[in-house]
Image (cartoon, rainbow, N blue to C red):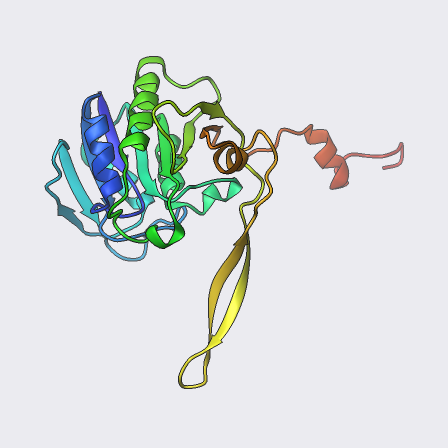
Length: 264
């Protein structure tokens, strides 16, 4: 089995090293990840400058490259360089990736990119304190999240994903043990309420931070409720076809594309 591994925390993250160790027992692991932290990069792709790759020694990996680009760049590079894969994994991410806002996440977006190439994919994230999400995971115990990654990855390699499912978005509580329950969820509607905070620099010029308050109330059955309230491992099946499940005639009527009367 050939497994592609990437992330958005960077190739030097301890989370990706824990993932290599877990996945190398299932097949050949090829790592292509950003050289630097690229959180919240979404599905950004580098088109207006060349990207550069650096060969990295990563124990347990068949090959490893650091890319000075985005997580999406990494997936594209890996497929061009190494060919097809049986499974793609993005993570283990420092910090949870929940709700419809996974489209902002570089972690989830890398898995989405792989899924567009027909590769079954997993995005996996570990809940950690916010202050620790921008480092390399020093002092973070990834052993339990690596255990669940290996368990889920093995199941996909053996059984595939159900029809209509392109990837799984997995979130592991910070206090999880190997006995923690796995629950299948749907995406919460919203995790943050972002706004812009204005500040003034020493020369009197304004500058701005995008900040946001976290939602604290979640609907049962969602990924956020499972992680934050029930303290369970959340597994959300994702279909990358974002077409709404609606009768197209209803949309045509709203857009006045269907006659409402004999003279229409």
